[in-house]
Length: 142
Ligand code: THU
Image 1 (cartoon, rainbow, N blue to C red):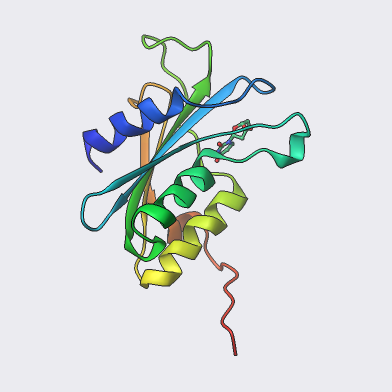
Image 2: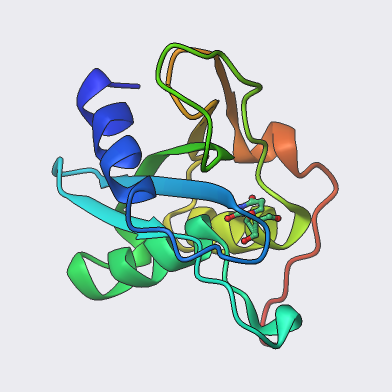
């Protein structure tokens, strides 16, 4: 994963709308051509309508270059109040986001690299969607 992609995810996080949890998440998705699409979590007063950063970034990627071109993504997150000199824990994508990332991987037939970071981008875990979502549900129209 590139530093540029981590920096992009950190910038995207600043656009989070998370007044209910105060947990700000940003995501940057990269295409095989090096294009970058961004997203941030967007909460709602009707809590269950909130959107995660990964799904937000994947929607942007869908329009910008198409899900089949997604090669890797970075997610960064932590409490809004956390400062840049504080370390946190890497944010692991929730189950629903894993399924959404898998959808992009299924379209291209390749695995997607997923880097999970704290709010500073310094604490990192790099893995793949196949490792994050083994034995996954897939649907093929018959
Ligand atoms: N959140 C994400 O944006 N991505 C994840 O993978 C986990 C959780 C958001 C949802 C909610 O706005 C906040 O983090 C707290 O759960």
